[in-house]
Length: 600
Image (cartoon, rainbow, N blue to C red; front, side):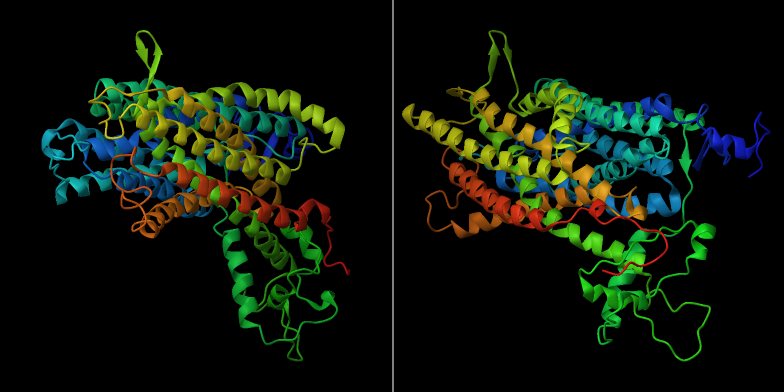
């Protein structure tokens, strides 16, 4: 588009790095760095993510008491409802990210997703407020009470509100971090450092918003009513949307490409299957690649051929019919070597991706069953203050607020001098540390549950009704050990995964690489639902309670055995991860050579 004349011409602007060549401003003009983007614009984005987490984070830890105590679902069903909601919120991030990158843009994606969040939480607020929209009050822990479950209309309203919220959360996760990164020029060393600062601050904004949600919002929900808690969350999301939208004249925008690298990856797999009967050439230079002289004109990156996953090379086999055609074949039957190598990179990351699913499965238990444990224990913090069990995750969140800057400014520089690695340790090493800690966390959770049940048995309180009867004479802060260890695991594994996927992903997938993490977490939450039901089914006839996790009386369940089972599974998963990570070769170990293929 036509642009107002500046003091310097276009060439001089590029030379002095005054223009972010890959971005435009809100009117479609080339984005000048001193006018648009940068840390000033990113502050509004950080405010949005902070308010969004303030409004929704409490749902991740305190929904089971609402589903069971107010809506009268059984505790296992309530736990599965939460994990299904969380899983949906993560898995939907993938299609939203594709839409944001190809058609509607990240800014509009965040705004639309924020509106969905606002409407979904507003519906939950209305249902929690009006008695006609929820079942009558009843104590589900009283075995003589016959609590009514929600009617068809009430259940429909609950799920509509819940999954509108999940869709909105998915859109914010998919588009907001990438839009924040768009405010910086990754080719400018100074702005690249500021981008790193932005991502660190993004984690802190999430922690601050989560900290307020885990304390203030949870306290409001328990002491003032669920309608007040949901209502304040709705207001927080509205404020976040307004603040984010106000930054429109300040933002840089990446121009949509109209195509997506996901399509190119899928084309490789389809073409390889279609060409499965063709013989592989011994010389990889015979595989299809565009001519080198087109690189300068189209700014296309070339990747060298690697002698791995050779079956995908069939996607680049050229079938010559005597006359060379200037127009290439269908991309669903013939792909470039670079395209094939990108597909190999994605396929090579899948084993790493799969090994992290178990960790989210463990996290789901801390967000469900551990909260129910807390409701049976003494929540006294001081003489006149009781901490809600759902607020226990404030311990790892508070720790992260402190440890993340220490990790970034002290640990990384020290380890960088020792190892020579820019990030201190490799991404895979960082992920591995987190997987070990998650295994330890589940083992500690099992030990704590044994102690809690022993206290209940020694005090003849195995059938004590939570809330209505005095709590067990054991402090709920015993649960802080498992939360604390898992909080450290979060910092290592999930942040390590973000860095790993972003650094290893093909160039065209950089902006949507975070979806690999969200999809891993989604599968972990869905796996939790399957595992809980499977464990109950497998142990139904060998326990008096009808299953390790059956019923609403957690004192009669065998949660300690379930935690021990998860710890063993996590340990096996870690050893599998070791084997996978030892065989993985970082993309950086294969240098990018412009100009076509390289023979091995």
